[in-house]
Image (cartoon, rainbow over all chains, first blue to last red; front, top):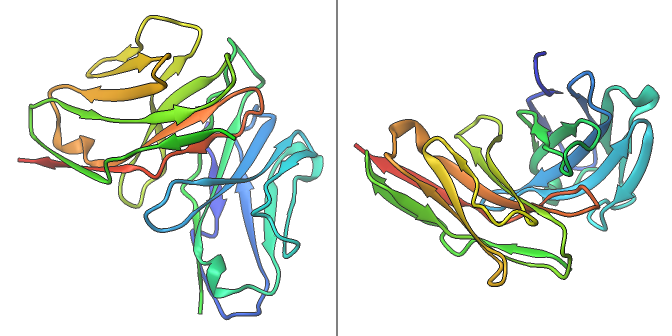
Length: 116
Length: 113
């Protein structure tokens, strides 16, 4: 088990461009989460998948953001028409089916997005 | 809405000494879970310790322990015998049945040699 992986680790783009990030969760984990972390802040929840179903989306996730998890395996997060305010670290996490009453989330290393 | 507050942006501790990081939260739920995560510079977040709200006993993991005061909605982390490798951002997090985590703003811990 190699843990949660995210690609790319760093992305620099110009304002107005589209970007796509990928997250590969731990293989047996059915839940996958996306968070955004800006400098000096804690991660903020964006969206969550159980298998391939997107069950919850934060109000932070504007219509320029879209996330998918085809076949319940890896997930992609796309940002269209990027803005400078989108610059942040995008974190992915995964968790196993609920066990013993809680779900521990395992985090990936993140993708740092810089929008020029 | 649930909130998590970490009022200490930065803390320092001498190597081998003990430090306590504070966290308060607000919720109307009775069943929830609290966590402390560590985020070293440029590295991914890892779980330090967890606490189930229904358990009265405070969780401990080696040098890490919590002081969970449910009525006061307080969840502090004590690090004993601090080591240089403990230097990191520490985040307090809350989750209930919705599964998403709500994080505090973090405390940067510096360990002085």
